[in-house]
Image 1 (cartoon, rainbow, N blue to C red):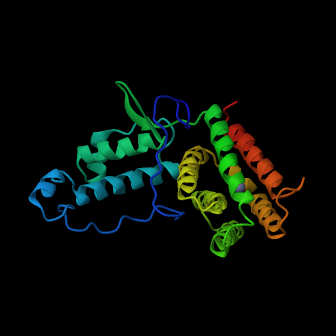
Image 2: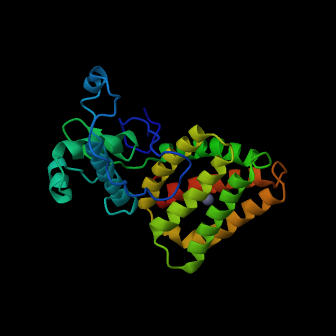
Image 3: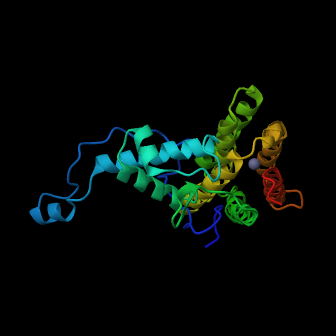
Length: 270
Ligand SMILES: [Zn+2]
């Protein structure tokens, strides 16, 4: 498998978020009382005896914290993620850490190697290209769906754009926040398709990109131009210029191609 940003061996990232929500992972809600999810029959209780809501939510909180540290660049590519040390510093059990690491490996944010354990994944040029190729298919479909999309979805494109450009212009936003808002805008394009499955795919791709972007801070300098470029894209959509030679579809193509070249250069991958 080589369909993610990792050096080798890990599975494809799995969709993990519910609904159409974007932006930072919200903190997990307080866990409901642990107990059977089954009906009242004794047989169904036994069937689900191993399920534990409390445990599952601890695993997802640990995974969220690790994800945050990777995206913020606190944990760099190649950093070993040692179970014991993580369990001690997070105050959770080793099996909980182990499960959280399995989640990160499935998302392509970490790799597991025989005899070496789990470490933060290292982006590769071919994988960055492939992520951009897949983004183009999904976001291009979104742009094509603009005219048919309902007002709510179009409104979301406008509000995510505004959140992003406001953050750029305030000059106060962290690099991670800018990346988050930027990529949320791109996911909002995919939401125009009205397909939750395509949106899940786009979110998984964005997580892989965030891994790459976390290793780069030189891109930050381009943030201002980037804001204008995105406003240009939405202006074309609003004008209904989708398929023209300089329409939104062609504009998006160039935008993603430029991003691909920029990320690969900034990472010094070629
Ligand atoms: Zn962009």
